[in-house]
Length: 320
Length: 314
Image 1 (cartoon, helix red, strand yellow):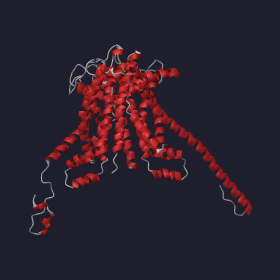
Image 2 (image 1 turned 90 degrees about the vertical axis):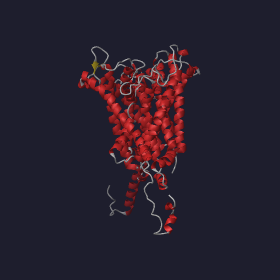
Image 3 (image 1 turned 180 degrees about the vertical axis):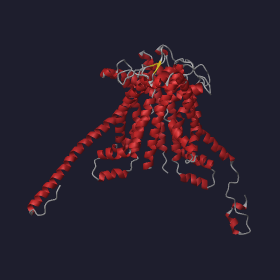
Image 4 (image 1 turned 45 degrees about the vertical axis):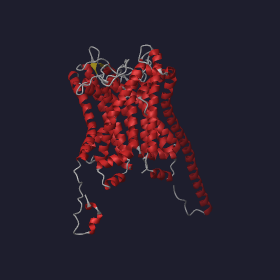
């Protein structure tokens, strides 16, 4: 308090007051309260997950009291509102897989080549402008992409490639193309980051051995960044599987078990979206269907995300 | 290849050596030529890909402007939805989105920053529960938005919270949806503050919270704001979860937070107009897309600018 904290106290050895205690003068309960509050904020995320799982599981369990699991997973006819109703989810799964597949067919080559350009070839000034533009365009809401596909892509492509649109304006191929546009920025941006994390020395070593620029990019940098690249692709696939608005607008609403790009399909997300907006009362099998399909979707994307997170960790460990 | 026999006469040896050298050089330059051509084809392919990506994404913006500009007028902001396209507008939807976003900000800013501060400054990374929270947040960021809609429907609208189909329920759902984005961005920003700043503050006798409040948070504010803006712009465009938690498509009055008469939101209204068969409504939908894109792209551009401007080099 007084002379205790002053260095001068040392000038009178033996006679001075005892040295100051090194612990805090007060217990500072406020610090602990703040820490507790902040921990609560973090805990909220765990609560959210728990709430998601609980809200999905309870109706799913009562759904499977009515419909057997093999009928659901391997049935080939999806007609929940017909009598007699049929709950084979395969058409919805195939619808989801086909729109995502066509999306990936567009997005993987375009995204990866863009990433190679940005990380290995682009002059710094070009990169500094193009990368932010791609990141900004990545923020375009999916409903805007869906409207674009419905009003522009579908009629335009129906004229050029009639096989792509059997029943205008709905088509799995068009939905896939739009989804592809949506996920190109994810693949391009994350893969670019992964390739730029590859140390310079690897490139220089390859150049020193006489490799051309293309060989350095494809045989040295690309393999070195492969875990980050695969992670970006898996993340993009998970976004494609979970995409709702684009498929709601252009994929149609008929659950067809087909991979034909021209056919109209219904995806899992589109089913949830259309059914939940109608007037349905809780407690009915139809209400529970939403949750059963939702659980399946949740599990699929969760597996993909876990895989991607693992891979990202791996490449961080190697080069940082 | 065998070496040249040293017993051969000198002239012949020279000739053989020269021939060998020539063939090696020729094969090298041959390869060079082919490599050059493939390299250039590859480069062209790269340019094509990046051009396709940029053109495709820009086409979305340009097409909305071309299609929607005839309907762009002030009445877009003052008219309610209507069955005739000339009198239909976005007012209740715009108000709905504004309220939704206000709710999201109030919810997400303190919770997001709080969680990020805890994870970066307090959490002991060797404890399993902290690692669980971390993994959990990363996973939540990848959950499809429609699943959050299901959560909103089963947990917030009905179930434990039982709020009913009101705007606050929509806000809460969107808030939970973008919370992981805010946490991840805020953590990144906090992590970028070097430990020496904290150690300096602690050495001068500040407590941990004083260090965080007066040193760490001020230094990481630009990064945090960037994350919040990006999260809000995502919330503005999010449509799917709102479909499940009661955003209606035909609301002719301004919404309130807790009113049970229904509410609408801009993207939901756009979706509704786009699905109507008449072309006038598609024009209207495109005009709505323009309004949304202008707001969003401006926000995103500001966020990216902010990040680049204040990216601090320690």
